[in-house]
Length: 142
Image (cartoon, rainbow, N blue to C red; front, side):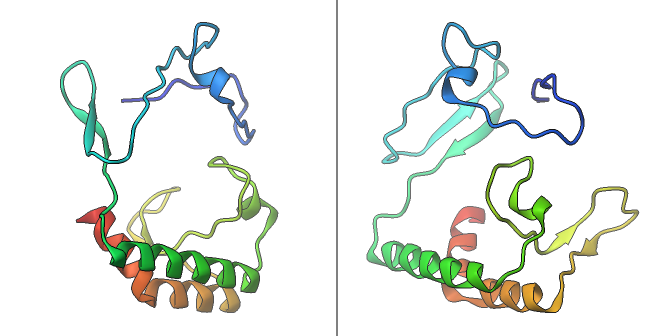
């Protein structure tokens, strides 16, 4: 699947509204899918290939504790980071984000570990070592 390209030039940012994406006047002609978040539902294409899996969250107190701990940790860690303008406003939205882990893109000839300045790297190490982040990653990849 290849998403439809917008008329934007390379490097431009666009924040699409719901009305831009769905409805009778939308140039994209997407459908709005209402989901109760209580059941797991695959979204499939015309050839029955799954391209999105909507997964209901676990109904456990561990999950609720995990979400609270991760939310608090992210708020604390965000204050410690130093973000460039590009890290604050990028193609995925108008919010601050740092990438971490292994990547093989942007012209690399082999997989590499993403690196950051000392402060940001310490914060990312703290985040990735925390039990709540590990639990959530395990849930999303499990």
